[in-house]
Length: 114
Image (cartoon, rainbow, N blue to C red; front, side, top):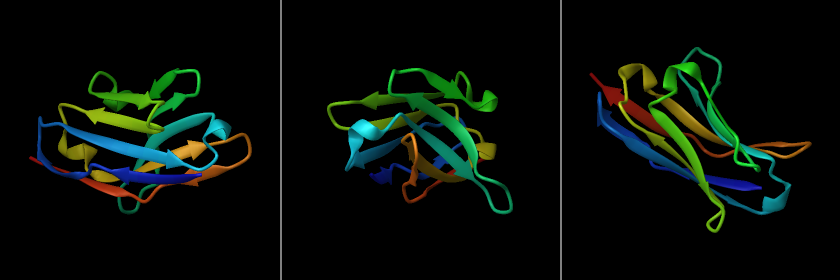
């Protein structure tokens, strides 16, 4: 499985961004896809994920502001981020999990200015 992430950038607090993650390869083996983020000196943390059945899960601090969705026809997962806060600044990584393996896309930097 290969993952191509895009959509990061610089935005003012209160603004919005949409991240995209296009998957290719053995798509049927994927059981979950999600977005993680990481800041310097901290562990990578789960932001949101969506299962192959459509169930979603969010980090508490982004609930109500971020929405994860997928377009099966395009094999793409999106993260719509609204009401962004400076503390959302991080490198965001797309993730795909199969029953046995974990895949990562390249990071995309999201910077929220105050």
